[in-house]
Length: 256
Image 1 (cartoon, helix red, strand yellow):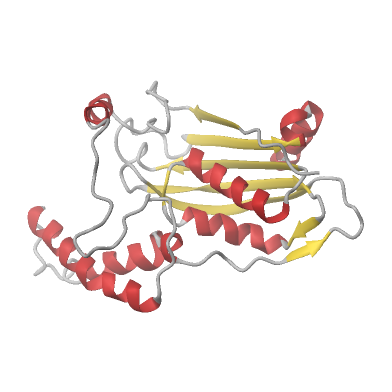
Image 2: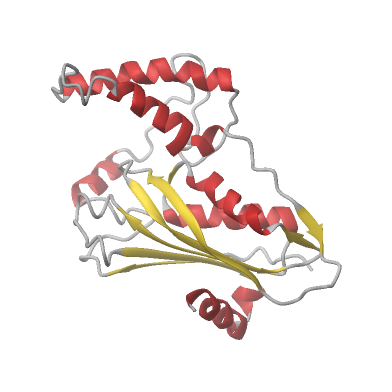
């Protein structure tokens, strides 16, 4: 039995000052939302000045080590310009090598999932016809908000009832990391993870819940509480979406 192509995504914000919440714009000021409206219909370049394809912040085009290395000096130069514009002197020993550090950080760490091949995943046959929930929780989420390039930090829980195949447990963490290490909005991150698992093993039921702090709403903007501000998103598919008791069991198990 393949999972139904019915999707349900739910997002909630807790203990945050009232804010516009629509299509992932929860962290934008009224002024920034107006700027978005002003750019509706504007067509931006699809290639950069080097003739290379541009793609979404949370997309993926694998690059070779040589290609990634070639990005670093270009990026370092641009961050040197940023420091100059901000009037930060590189005679300050704390800032001398900052452009190079930032360049390496974005290419090799924060945005690594944009340029890496998919993680190697181990799939096993469901020989015992397991028809109960398999759950992995406490999976680290470390990402960057696409809007302001601020940290998204939290945990992910994934539960599924297998069809003909079972996924190696550690692979769930690798899948989450691969999608997290990009510019993201949390709603789309959950959908990407669910899509990938669905295509990989065709589970009968699938749930992905992410709870994360968004520093675009903590260090700036509404300046929410670092202790209590939390965004929760859920993606439910197949039997977990259709069966209230199963969905309730999944949510209780990931809380306890």
